[in-house]
Length: 263
Ligand code: MF3
Ligand code: CO
Image (cartoon, rainbow, N blue to C red; front, side, top):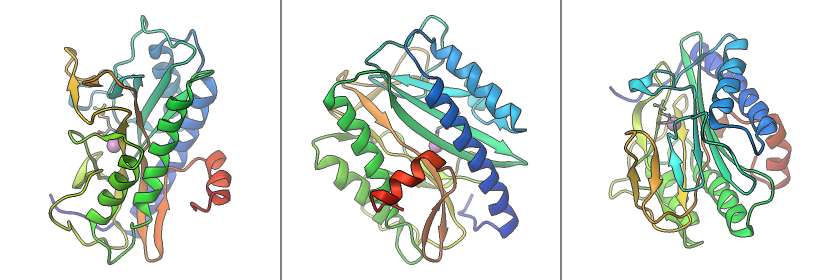
């Protein structure tokens, strides 16, 4: 499969998918509290997605059993919701969700602090989020894919963090995963030249310690090998003539982004 350029109609549908996904994250972020199970989060997420006429794209994707990936503390991504896994004060919780609207996908992730967390954990979440914005500064026609990858890695590593190598971002559209792969670390090659109309899911996964990860026996949950905390931040973006449009950005974030000069 090669990298596709989306038509104006496809872009409209992806905007709507992104808008609904942003609402889903907004609601989940507000609902998240100690005492909830990770399955409670999944149930709520699925309900919100379906109430907006969308389909949760992760459900049954390659056999994944839920709608929302809930990954706690040293879990990097693809945590499986479980009614016995209770969220605790002080946890950091990564929520990854995907929706399909009229055949078009949007995919995004946020890491939340539950109650009071350590300053170190808060820093990891913040740097992971900022690494995404460092990367997408280069999401412009004429630049190359590796410009994004390289910038994410350089930013995160300057804080001594480990950038996960075993999982990458991706093109997105009619399918959840399309070409190209979008690594969060520099490649030997420049990668494809970016063009207006390309849609990408850019998703840095950053560990407080080493970059190495392993898979639990459930064959889904990815954890840090050294047990360090991990954070995830993902959005679906559209490459426009002047730069990126973030299709899955939450309204509550837009104001802050503008204040920080990130938007
Ligand atoms: N955001 C994840 C990704 O890009 C999707 C989760 S995979 C699933 O790979 F199987 F859980 F759907
Ligand atoms: Co993704």
